[in-house]
Length: 320
Image (cartoon, rainbow, N blue to C red; front, side, top):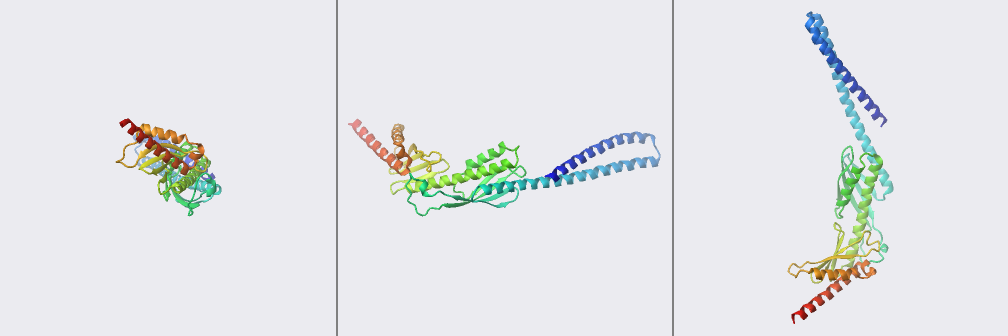
């Protein structure tokens, strides 16, 4: 950027020269008006006109030089921004495995990201029965940036099979906090986004894998990554919504039953008292049971059936 600094200095000098010539021209114009009142000869008038035309020519020449210098300076600054982004991306490529730059046109950058899913042995508390598991997942990211400042404006992911909207919003805020800093923050914000996106891909893939493996002919289980919730669709049209802790299923954190809902619109609504009893009993189970998805869903279903029998028995007794 040494050439850019020199050009900025030259530009300031030309602006000062233009201001000086303009002020001189204004003073000469005042003198000219005074002299035009006293001199009547054609020769004197011709000299004054020539002097005025020379001043105009100098101003026009400087104006053109200033505009050309501004154009060159902007081109150099844009090139410097592009170079900084390429340097930043190269640094991230060295740190993160599986990341490649496909295309960069100044306002959009296309990245290829290969994410490696941990083997099943890290899920020692979960029962995995699937054999055709993908341990390498490929995504592409189209990152739109603001030209010049290179702020992240938007991100698209292909295929769009994992929710990353909250990560994109956080990345935008991350850049806005560090606008006054240069390459280091350009690198760290982009690196932060890629790391978070990769973590989300691994987390959601493992949670979906565990949910599918825990599904049976009696109950189907799915993971909703936008809400970070597991839903178990159980017999009788009852859906159990379970909260997962950060890091699950790799960590040993237990699951938590949040609520129960009837998926059958014609069925009787679950009363608040009934729900509280089931929730309390389910969330009071031993930690080992709540750590394993299959065991926890089976236990919730068992508690649900027991409570239903108690409710029916209670209703039958009260009606006698």
